[in-house]
Image 1 (cartoon, each protein chain N blue to C red):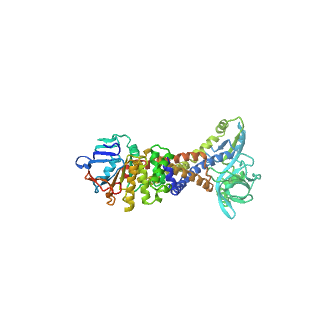
Image 2: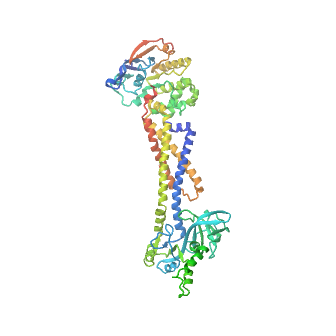
Image 3: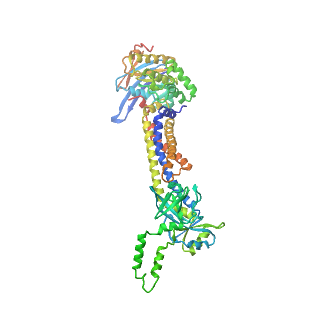
Amino acid sequence: MISLAGRDILKSWSKFVFTGMGLGLLIGVTFSMAGVYRGMVDDAKALLSNSGADLWVVQKDTQGPYAESSSIYDDVYRDLLGMPGVARAANITYLTMQVLRQGQPDVRAMVVGILPDSPGEPGYLVAGRQITRNHYEAVADVATKFKIGERIQIRRNEYTVVGLTRRMVSSGGDPMVFIPLRDAQEAQFLKDNDAIVGQRQRTAANPALNRPGVPGLLDAVIVSQNHNPYVNAVLVQIKPGFSPEEVAAPIQRWKHLQVFTRAQMEEILVVKLVATSARQIGMFLVILTIVSTAIVAFIIYTMTMGKIREIAVLKLIGTRNRTIAAMIMQQAIALGIIGFVVGKIVATIWAPMFPKYVLLIPGDAARGFAVVVIICILASLLAIRAALKVDPAEAIGA
Amino acid sequence: MPVKGIHIEGLAKRYGSGDTAVDALKDVNMEVAAGEVVGLVGPSGSGKSTLLKALGAVIEPSAGRMTIGDTVIYDNGWKIKDLRALRRDSIGFIFQAPYLIPFLDVTDNIALLPMLAGQSNARSRELAMTLLQALDVAHRAKAMPAQLSGGEQQRVAIARALVNRPPVVLADEPTAPLDSERALAVIRILGQMAQQYETAIIVVTHDEKIIPTFKRIYHIRDGVTYEEAGEGRETG
């Protein structure tokens, strides 16, 4: 038996292919939306993996340092190093800000304050070297488009880019710029000169802090105001043989701090932080799926209605209903396959053009293909219903 | 009663019921032998289309009896369960317009019927080619319907109607879109094919120029048929 669907497609292949391409662009958008979500999740996981930490120690009763702000004293890490199971502990700061470049547009980035050769340092470089000095050096993610040797400005100080890394991004997808911890603390907490002068004047004008009978009190208060002993978190690596939970429990109990394991932090980042975005994207995917179904249904229905007389003749000469239904369904599926192939190709082409990471995974493509086939089958049902209702007597005339 | 051909006795068709009932066919009696071409003539609204649909097993008559060959098709109710198979195997259709399947080439338009009947693709195409040769359109075997002239399309439609060697062919105004010369050619071909394939052909027509070509003509008026001898100039 010849394939009626195949012959019909061959006869009007250009119409079919162009329709399939139009559908493919829509499917490409759908794949890209899924890729945006996957990219967000991957960014969050990359953030955790690249930090090299087993535990995140943050301010008590917060879900910092990524999902909420957190501030703890920068000497806490010394206490942690004495806790059982702790191998390494290092202070870290995170600050999302605009990084200025000379003569070029500024770049939104997450500035990370790190200690050289400590947890939090970028795991690998694609060019240059790690930070070796205590001040004014930076390692940047390639997504910033900074170049080795380029001078960038963070707050009032300039930094030289000495190294480039890859896939070091915040949970929001902003590329990271690593600078020495002291500089990062200053960038985060130090006020501008006018503000400092103003604060000193206000402190001096406060009779409680400027008592004539207590010499040195005002100087001591002003010095404490200029010192910035805070970081956002301490990253902890644990010794082999210890579980994250058994190391985290005493820190939480005795140091009055919040401790998150890798699994808990992943829960915060993937489930909580991107939850709203995920729902937003999910809603888009649902709408795109409905729109795709409606378009396929409309196209197939219109194509079928254009063949009513032929269908009546086919039924009159003895063609089985299932043969006619199969013809319509095969055409819908063929349209879906063309759309899927075009969608996959265009999504792959335009994914790198997105400003944030778009991750297209084979599993999503496989699921997408199954959904496209199901959509096409469902969409063809309307046309099949109409075709099966065609009376063969219509071929004979009024 | 003929062993081959079609025999219709007291066929009636009523649409609706009660006060709104319409008797489209009241008393249709026809007998067409194998190899014979008869005309069915009548004014608009006389019941021609209803009769054709009833003979084509696409609407159910209300009463009467119909046999094809020695098989009773209808006797106050369908006697055949699979009407689709009946239409495919025992009744050929030729329409006013050829209504060829536009996405199949000439050969496959004809071969589709034997394929639907379970014949192999090769055998079906062989049967199609035999008919195309007989109808002198074999040179257009690979053409698409849109590439054919009106006369060629109608010949392909005739081939499609005959390919399963049905005992009955129903032709609904087959010459309407053709000029006199081509119309007479189609009737001549139908006459030849009727004899060659031992088929009873009923031609519904308004066409004044072909009416004289039939040996026998059935007139239908208000759902009742009357037989009349024709001149039989072309159909032999």
